[in-house]
Image (cartoon, rainbow, N blue to C red; front, side, top):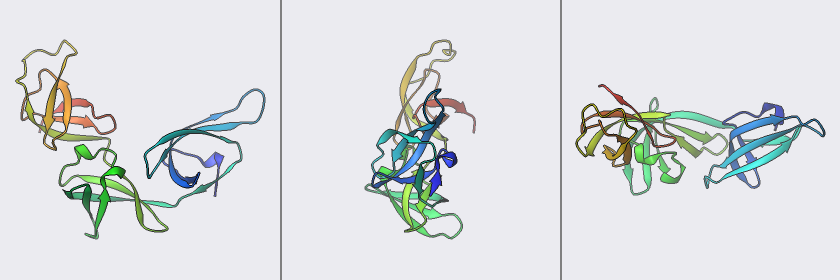
Length: 188
């Protein structure tokens, strides 16, 4: 059990017959009445996001989790195969618990969060940004960087991303895995 003073981002709790992770929280102390904590929670199984308010001093049932780094091996239908970097133990993850499966490339590392009590995978998180190569896009226009125009491009994982007009096939770009947006061109 944890108190509301111990709430932090990424904390996993049992709430309303499910496991939720805290995405965001804010401690509010109104001029009149008791203090409370406004939270945004994501259901680990379904991905549904809810807002909830806990009164100050409320006890929460926390879930003991372990974060481990795994390397992505290959995909088979909706099942993704990962290997632990140190023990070479393999695990199989369903596509629905991966935060951005369309950007997952063979050989990339991902962090898998396990429920320590029953060793079940809860969440699979890719790094905040990932570098991928452009495999197809319309030819770029040299010097066209002044406008904020974008064109569609396909990256090596098959995902489609909107990129600036000056990007060409073969270029490497950094993509934000949270939003799926182009960040910058990378020289390799």
